[in-house]
Length: 179
View 1 (cartoon, rainbow, N blue to C red):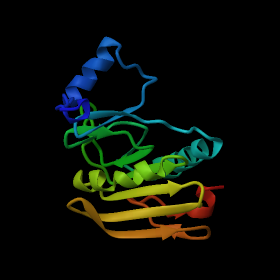
View 2: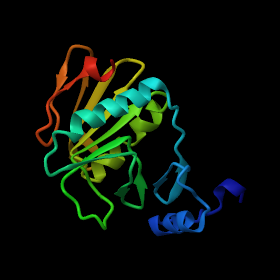
View 3: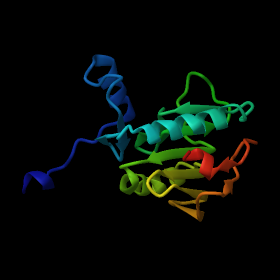
View 4: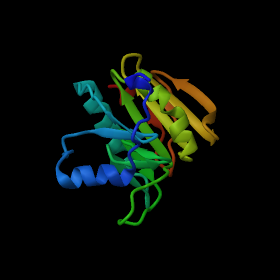
């Protein structure tokens, strides 16, 4: 049996919490836990990435009423958690981490392949909409209507288009999003 064929020790969310509490992981470590495997999330923080996250945060936060917008926070999934760039939630108790959302957004500069692999994870978590903002192509890919591990609708929007947003937020102007 080769090293790669040996069983893995799968981590739990609680294991990762203890890693943070003990200092093994710090606030500087951005990780995601998928099927018990801990992945480093490498973010290429470019001015375009930062500007898109900030623009979306301002656009959505002022309009969600009783909802909430969180930036690079945890979203619990089966056997792990993800850390999208933004999540829009219904009102949630302050002593809980969210396990579903109205909207999860990934702003993709260098992570498009990885962000596309997360579609099924977001759908299974019941996230109503999953958006990928593709900086290089100035495209907003919108997944709506989770059905098992897929979304019923996937649409692509480019410059000059308006995309309806959840929780009563005004539509997102794709040209304004990408500046």
